[in-house]
Image 1: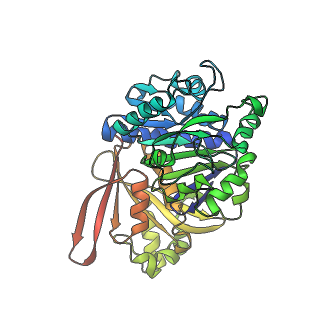
Image 2: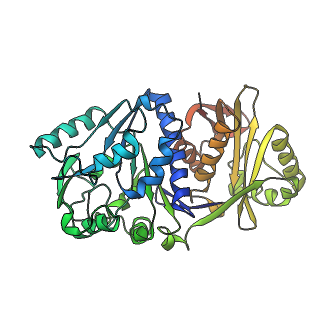
Image 3: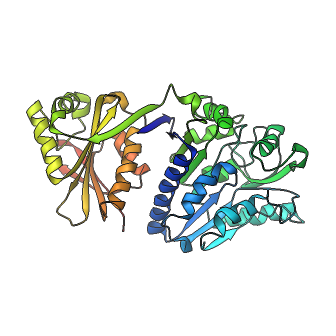
Length: 412
């Protein structure tokens, strides 16, 4: 079962438990890391330090990743804590991920530096020289990302790293999280990566569990995009995903889409025909148009003969089809999908494509996935790009007015 929502460009996924949330986010993150390493040879990641990241970091540390090709940064740090203080964010990350796997390198923010301005310049220079490919973050109770609390958050900040004064609610959260016994023990100032430093990464994974974050999640997803809700900037990012559990996402329950997949059968032919015969759907279909229920049945039989196919269900209603078919090229599978217009633009294709991609890599041991998409089908093109597909070529046919973009994703 998938509970999903699209807010602007932000893709939101909801899970029943924080454990499920962390494991799923780690699975997606590991896949993204492997993709970046295949493309660039290495991967640079900014990590958040907070109890909200525990399940994610634990699952990520056990993932199949070439950690020797990964370089790590951390996004914020208290000023004035003792170097060995367990509440220090660098120490948190050292315990939970940095010393668990063999990173190629780890760059720590030093909140105890004698010259804080010099430390800001040093870390900023590192970020300019080696920009982050992705960010793993959370959202604070006050809507902050990193230590960009509302009163110091600037979407157009000129700096990459800065010193900030923490607001009262931010400091109180550190007590709620069990990191400090009382608010007077929480430092008043910190170093933080700025919002531009975070959002310039190509991918953002944001993990936010617990009921204490429900208000912040609601404002992030459904409120105005403004600096008083720093996390709302995620809705403008091209490739950001927000993962919430049932508690943190409780105020989204009335707006999420609940989607399930089940095996497609020939009994689904009438429902498949009802969708594929719609003009707005048919205009994007080159190979699998159906003029009757019998045509739809034939299409289903072809899907099942050469691969696997699933019905995309919203409640008891079939709202689309997703299929994987073997091609003549060994280890390469073709992807086909269509969706009822009622679910367009809601992140359904992106979420299901992610699941199918994992199935192809892990269960089928596929070398590559390939999809043909009509060039005017902006939604499918966007979903493919969000899932790491690249444009291999554009095909043209004398009897068809549109070009077909051949998208491909290579696992090896």
